Length: 315
Image 1 (cartoon, helix red, strand yellow):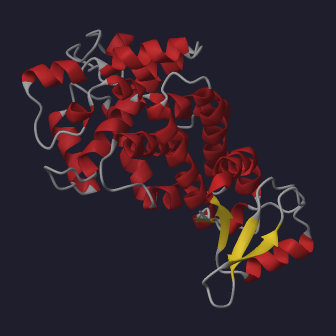
Image 2 (cartoon, rainbow, N blue to C red):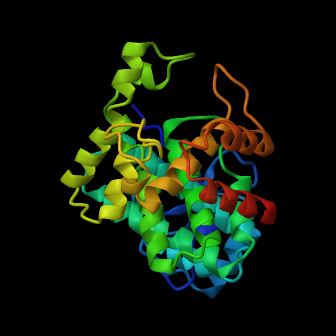
């Protein structure tokens, strides 16, 4: 029986000149019914190859090369972010798509040590792009997902947190820590029953008690992963604490909630309010901010909410 070869489309913008590829690249022939070899695995992408790549509309790889392609993108993501010939909108999309893939893997294998190895360079790249180009924040926000899923929510919160931290004047190295905390803030949900996480409608009291365990579970996962930075651990464990001491899991008040946990809490609420769920339509940014200011002054740090308003006005 003849083996069926399956191909998948790849983003030609991530192919970096001067680097060797360990996957074979194809393009459709003129009839678009079969594939033609363009670049063989183990080839170095030279100037002529790069010019030829620009002239081609779509590139493909064999499905069997998918993991090697993903590893290549991961390795070169910072080079891609620094490339002057790639528009900021394209960079933002590449980073967002790569981050979505990493977070998907994270929620499927939450205790894999590769999580930290794959996530931190990606966060660092996001920070670098935001700091290098003032329009990067707007470009990243434009492509944040508008339907609520746990993995896209984690990515959206990290984008809002980095943008907000930048607005607040947080230093680059500290932004990298904040971004990591935001990316991992809901990792505990990977251990919560799927039917509860994705329920269409309000949770029962018993289901909500189960859901409330996710910050503690996430904190335990982070410790198992070897994460020792207290700011990351606090962001994961305390993003549902409230200034009045009525949050969870530790019921600590404003004095015990770290700055990073407060920032993530604001971004967490804002994204939850402005994304669509099966049982509710999204609020506009204005409506969400209004609700946060009028109803959550005892829960959220209003000085951070004010910084969020200033950040959104700059978009």
